[in-house]
Image 1 (cartoon, rainbow, N blue to C red):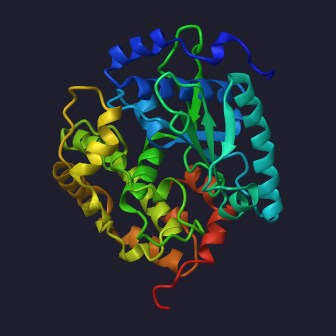
Image 2: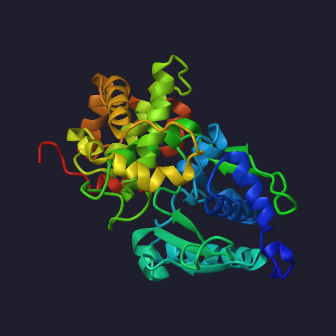
Length: 361
């Protein structure tokens, strides 16, 4: 991609104001989502598009829900090589540098500035953590330079999707800047399983998949609770938008392979979410006038949902946990053959088995 020096490198303020009125969201947040959309569109048309899946809140609220809030960060999972890292750190580093070159071309084309975040610092640190965070700065009508950036988090830890990834249409066409395009993402059960693990975790949670406290799973954000609350409310109302049995299996798989001593884990950290978190983190990205429930209501609804549908294990699930903590991976106990085939001999699970603490240890 050649560097874009056209007026398209900036966004007409009237376009932002119009979308702000349409969605009843603050102008600065709308502006960021437009830039986020431009990044996604360029990425979806790039040579590395098929190697990544959009995950997290942006995937849920833009691709599967009715835009009950805006999401202003991009979380991508690398799924292009299920055995990335099996040949050592240099294999991971080479892939990161390969992708960084493409992202730099993309940023130049859009008139943005690509930087590694201060938390990432350099590719050597990113390689160790198998996680890299970029900030993509853009010229803003509303924000000072520090706040005018799209945060792009990329995990190279799991390198696979348990379920077949899908392509979904992105819901925005922005004036002459963004044309219709599709985004590769995960199926909703897999997205919500990751969301639930992120919600239940936090800084106090001991992980076995990340060396340091980084990534989506360590961001104790009220949006994790809110997203899960709305899904749980749908279930209570009889809408059942997901395959709950599959969701339970995925949460269990992610739990035992990512959280230390998951056999005893009940996610009591949700008590830490407060109404102050709603004011700080949710109000600016939810439509004006939209009724956001209190943290107490959200926590109670989610707690009931988890106890009824997710954290109550039957004999086969208990046996799956016992096998894993005995360093034996038997996904066939809980998953269908096609799902087992995708994950059975993957490097990630072999690596995690070496880190678990046996229940009889």
